[in-house]
Image (cartoon, one colour):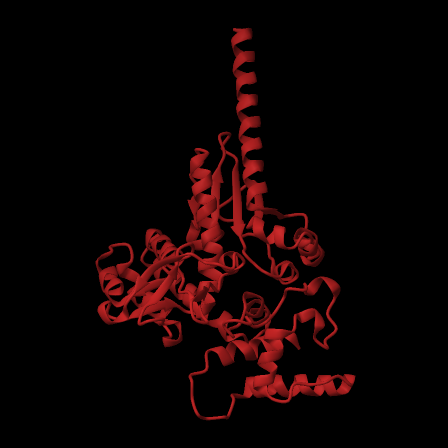
Length: 370
């Protein structure tokens, strides 16, 4: 039921403003099934689709008249942001979990087509450049888009880039300008008279986002932002990926990013030539993450595999790791480790120290025997 409602809310958020009161079949069906479910239980039901949206903004999932296991929802898990009236990341994750989720189809088809293009052209550098673009530049002006044609690595993928970005909504304008979040560079949503809100969990949890670039569409040939599924599932975790990359470079361990056309996210070579594979996930719901987790592909080869999530997820939900472990499929539970990014970096540091210590002992032993 939650998957149906979440999918309907995502569809509603992408519905153009129109005077037509008729909703598409998926939205109407989700509402009808929710009402029927409530009536069968003897609970109050939303009186209309707009009231269903209000429910999603004002009632946490754990208070819905739906029987969910205790670890599937937390007190702060809402499907709609109460300030922006847009689907939360939690909502998108439930929608992605639905079999026919349009958001998942869009993201998967776009990324698969892009990878196929790069494989055919034998251009891994183009895929890497494309991935970095989606992470570091979720907002582009019309002028920015035109200039990308001059980028040798991105030239191959101009059509994929155009499909990835859509015109920024007028609702995000304030005083004729769009404002970027200084942290993630996504567009900020104006709230009330003088507030803004960032839609990414890693930013809006701080309540007072810092304003970065201000853009006037009239002098920039328009403003474009990544489609919502890409912002949530590429830009969001991508920022955690590049943060990890920066930290590893500082340790003298520059990783290979998105090896073999995104088989996984980071490939790290330790001083003893051991290879660690890392897949980064920035998910709000650890139960859904565990349920959806699969083994990291075996190529390029590696010795150990890790799933890494930003530390703030563990800070917000103390049971994050335990809930994930409870829901991960039994057949892969012992083949992959989930760590916070800070714990993973500490593990890397300990392993590097151990390797260097063993190498010194080996060298000293060789010298003594000479």
